[in-house]
Image (cartoon, rainbow, N blue to C red; front, top):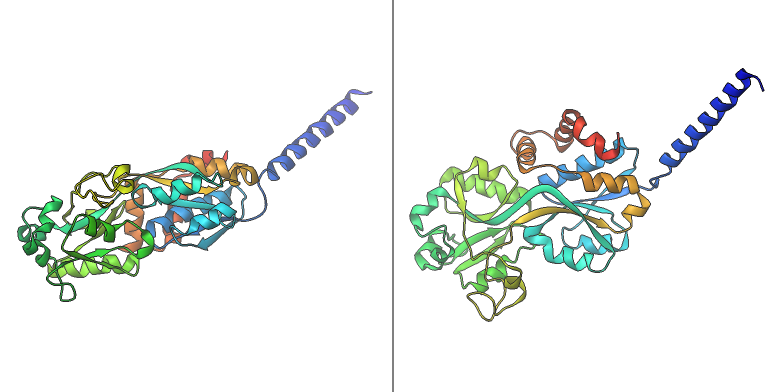
Amino acid sequence: MSKTTGILIRGLTMSALALAAAGSAGAQDSADPIKLTLHDWTGQLITTQLMGKILQKAGNNVEYVQADYLAQFAGLETGDLDVAMEMWETTGREAMDAATATGKVENFGPTGMKAKEEWWYPEYMKEKCPGLPNWEALKDPACAEAFSTAETAPKGRYLGGPVTWGGFDDERVEALDLPFEVIHAGTDAALFAELESAYQRQAPIMLWIYAPHWAPAKYKGEWVEFPEYTPECYNDPAWGSNPDMAYDCGKPFGEIWKVGWAGVKDKWPGAYEAIKAFTIDNDEMGQMITEVDLNGKTVEEVTDAWIAANEGRWKPWIGQ
C-alpha cells in the first residue's frame, strides 16, 4: 500500500468517524418539539422564551403552550407538557412536591431567582395604619376601614392575584381573623394597573406584590410582616395562633424552580442539561420586566437583546 493510499484510507476513516459522531450528536435529542408552558405574568414569559431560544440555538424544536400555573402538573406528569420554567416556592411548592412524588415530574433545579410574594401597601398608607408592617395592625377596625372601598366597607380590601396563582390568601384572612375581603385581579396587568392608579391618586390599596418585579423598585412601600412561614403552618392546623386552622402565617420565601416531565432527560438529554444549567438573577429579570411593562418593548425584543449580550453565559449550557 502506497503512502498516498494510506493517507486516503486514514482520511476516509477519520471522515467516517466524524460523520458518525455528527450523526450521533444530531440524533442525541429527539426531533419532536419540547413543549414549554406559558403563564400569565411577564417574567415567566421572558424566562420561558429565553430558554426556548437557547434550546433552538442547540438545534431543538420548541413549542410554547399556554397552561394554568398549578393545573399544568397534570400535563407534565403525562408528558403532554415538558418544561415549566417558573414554579415559585411561595405559591407552588405543595403542587410541585405532589407531582415530583409521583416520579413522573422532575425538579430541574433553581432558576437563580429568589421569590418573594406577600401583601404590600404604599408608604403613604402607613400614617393611617401606624402599626404596620406588623400584621396585627390589620386587625384594628380603623386600619381595615382605611384600606376599604365602597364594595368592601367597613372591611379592608385586599387585591389578590388571579385565582390560578394560588397563595391561600382567602384561607389566610380567615385563619388570622382579618377584617379584610379578598378581591382577585383578573390578570397580572390588571393587578399593576390598579396599583398605578391608586398610587397616582394616593388612594388606599393593599395588594399582592411579587419580586422579582419592577413594582417594589418603582413604588415606595412595604410588605406586611405575617408570622413566618413553616411547612407546619400549611399542613398542621394546631400550629400557630389559630389552633383550628392552617395558613395562619405568611407566604414562604425562597427559590423559583424549573420543573418538567421526568422523560425529558431521556428524550432530549442535551436540552435537559441546558435546562438544568439555566440561571438568571433577580436584578436581570427585574430590568427585563421593566423594559416590557414600563418601556413598551416586546418580550421578543428583550429576550433577543439578552441572548445577544450573554453568549458567553448560555453557549456553555448547550455545549458550545
